[in-house]
Image (tube, rainbow, N blue to C red; front, side, top):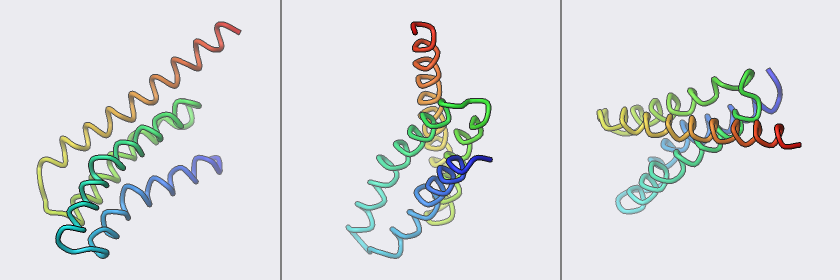
Amino acid sequence: MKRSTLIALAVQTGVLFALPGMAQLVGRGDVNFILTLLILMALHPLCCLGTGIFAGLDIKARWWLVLTGPVLALCGDLIFYDMEADFLFYAWVNLLSGVLGLGITALIKQLSKRYR
């Protein structure tokens, strides 16, 4: 496994798994609500999209990174928040975000290779 892949996995683990726990420790009340909303609605999908783009650069070696994003986000959400079935739908949205990033990056890479 390459060093860049390990760094991407470490960043993904920190953002998707550890950040919800840190939000629970930092604030209470309104601050906690705003941090949770920011993490769930903005940070998780952007991290999964970025991981998909990174995985699209070398699909054969990094395809599994697209799957780890939603799994880590789902584990972090279920541990640090209530056991809600809505998080499963949210994991599917994160997975689709990562697959979309992977597909678009692979398509752009293929088209740029063709027209050189």
